[in-house]
Image 1: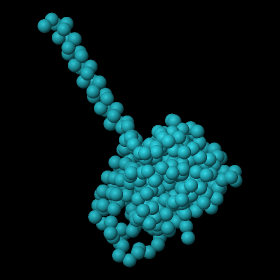
Image 2 (image 1 turned 30 degrees about the horizontal axis):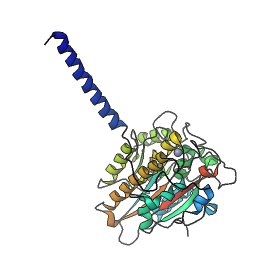
Image 3 (image 1 turned 90 degrees about the horizontal axis):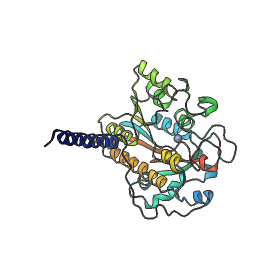
Length: 338
Ligand SMILES: [Zn+2]
């Protein structure tokens, strides 16, 4: 064989190998969500938003009597401060956050094959409408229906007039402390963990909880703020924690499937990508609940399991005052409203 032909073959082999390696690395970093072929998906009846919410018969209240999203803070605090039920030796809690998940996604639950929301409801749990923005719709909201203010209100129990998180991209002062810090620092629990992929939580200079993360590290507080590259990575981190013998007492996590697809292609049940994003988030949530139930110590642990979202969405955005952005949800394995 001529020299130039050999060189050509070697070059071709190297090029193919490089392409295969690049593709493998990209797939690992950015795995495509599973496709959920569910009857009815992509053909959801278009409804007026209010009628859509009224059709959700699994909800314990109405959107008019929605509870504030700060209820999350109250439920977690009360759970850890209440006496241990008989036969239980340890308290645990988890907040499974689906970022930007409109509550009308619950219309899909009837056809869900694997769903954390259905699991909690089938186990005797409760679902309620909640609201973000500081006041319920239609009164004018006092904080943006955005990511940082929303999760911030759940983690601190107050609205932007107190926590001062008016939007994304500006670090919060240490006070008011989040539950991830205060519960551990005040020795109510031994450990907490915050699992995310969104860098805006605590992974850049302008991130909401960068000051708190630095304070936690400087003071050797047992609160683990861990960021993965994407939701698959977040799920891995959460499952590794839940599968460990002495898992974190309080876990707070956010999945970006719904927010990401809403911004990309539209917050709408008429958008199969948004529908699929909800399926993926709710299936990941179901994996977390399965892992909790599979814990060897599960029978002696008293778990509070909550699923919620920070805000809804309309067209390809959120942050504003619309009905679709304001009404959220809380699902719990325990009673929420009297
Ligand atoms: Zn968000």
